[in-house]
Image 1 (cartoon, rainbow, N blue to C red):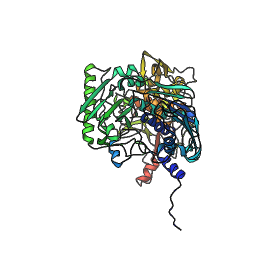
Image 2 (cartoon, rainbow, N blue to C red; image 1 turned 45 degrees about the vertical axis):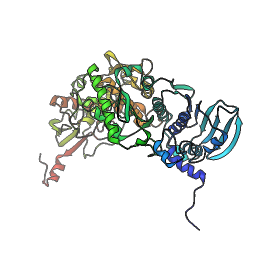
Image 3 (cartoon, one colour; image 1 turned 90 degrees about the horizontal axis):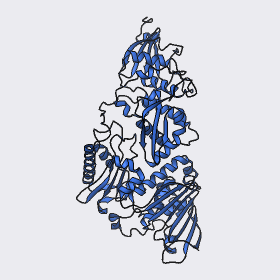
Image 4 (cartoon, helix red, strand yellow; image 1 turned 30 degrees about the horizontal axis):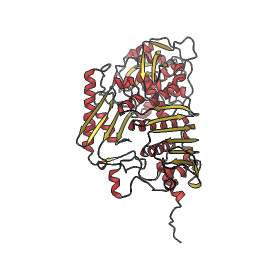
Length: 591
């Protein structure tokens, strides 16, 4: 009896679903792309419980006949291609015929569709890849697909879904990408009946970008169009000062298809060379158009990667377009000049490398204030040492020797050498200060002389709205100002030397990448304090004066847990005289 067998169709579909359907946003992407290919001018996406309970996509496209609708649920059934050579001239978003059967195999699936030349629509019900019902129903022209209980029959995949907020952020971002690529279509996204996005149809991509990014942000940047040969690029560049901690705000499209491509991203970042701090990323969207035969989109199951026949030509046009736009922007003058950071970091102690690291370090104002932090939460065990230095005033009683590598403080104790991680120590001090919100004698906030407006993308605005109650308890006062704009009014006194906009933007990025929002097992307040402390603390490779070191040690004595930084890493290490003597094989201590 042969050991190799052909898999049943429903099993093959489940395997395909593992590549095509990763999470609710994958379903939204595939269904909306089908609606776009059907010539829809209006697409309505309704989400329940972040897509875990229900995803509903309705359009006013061409619809399908009964036979076509049933065929659409078979693997590799498509109207987009019929010959191998068609793969070289793909102009549609979908073409493999895998999405619908894959989605139907891992959900309770219902499709209602009708063409304009028929009187009745057809309703097809599929549960877990098994056809359950086909009937005629009344329906408007177009197609509505309802996906319920996603992954109900694949619990292992369902287990890996994140919080509702995280999954909705992915869905929202997906709709933004599709809307940017297709300004002629009206997109409406709602969650639990509440409108998230309502992008009405517009004449061009720049009008759509104004809807997505906000008119204020668009006015501060520069739009561009550039072409050479068969390649044309149009898009928008934000001023270099509007940088972010991640590359999530770089939007690249190839023939109206959102693409994540390392070469494209590198080209964009290189165009900003000398204008951005190290490890910061610009805000850019670029629409690349070229003949279909010049690009291969049949590279990845999600069609999020492409290969160019002549990559250097495409990259050159993209770079020239962005550089020209930046030159124009520079002639107009942006808000303030940038200080370019050139020194390579030799250590990685920080939570996020931010703009503050290339500004002159001045920690003395923090230490000049009379701050009395309350006890901080317990963290990791103390660092290795046979003796403890955690006694009242012990750090300030140490004799300062100097710095090692501008990163570690060397001190002499009566019985040995104490090495202190300056970043971790300062981080602990700031964390405890931010945790002192219940101490009425502690001045939490420093009002800004001029409140600073902060223009965000829709997803960033949603995340910041969730963070506001936590930020307020720590003295960071941020208020909504309409749309996706907020106003920063005050900052914690221990962070007053930091750029408020960079601080808030980085906290948003960290919250998104860390999945903090509404995660039951995560204390958002603790995460924010850790992030803020790490951002504001003196970095490695920073020269400190002896006075600054003494001030830091004095404040470290006032903390309740000077053994570790807020993340649990040790902040000091003591080597006793006896340990030193044993290492050098001496019979007694050198002292």
